[in-house]
Length: 128
Image 1 (tube, one colour):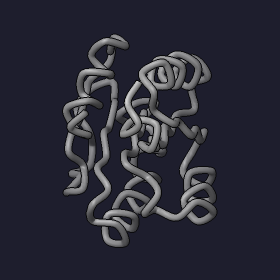
Image 2: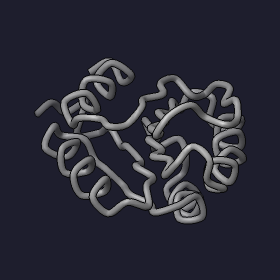
Image 3: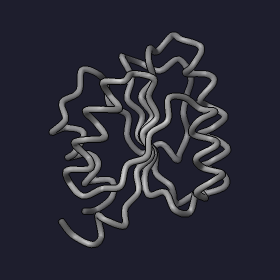
Image 4: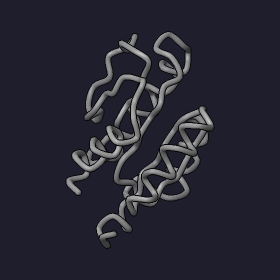
């Protein structure tokens, strides 16, 4: 475990308990600090409490590409992207997204997704 990873904070946003448990546990085993939120409002509260400058990556697991949550999370991404342009985002979805997400989205992964793939992409994004 490197000190660089210990100082790396990832916010995982998902309303699926298994994604929280598996994804967060796998990332923590690799030495990352992981915060979780079930939805945009919870993520917003964490971001305000912690400060976006203390986040190194946001992973947003969208429940379905045609659900209202996809459009609900878009303003969060746009607002945070404007406030913290250094902050990368990874989206995970069931298929094609119904709206166009501009930067700061740096990766978009399609389910099903293995933990190994998730970890490899996180390492690539963070350069660790």
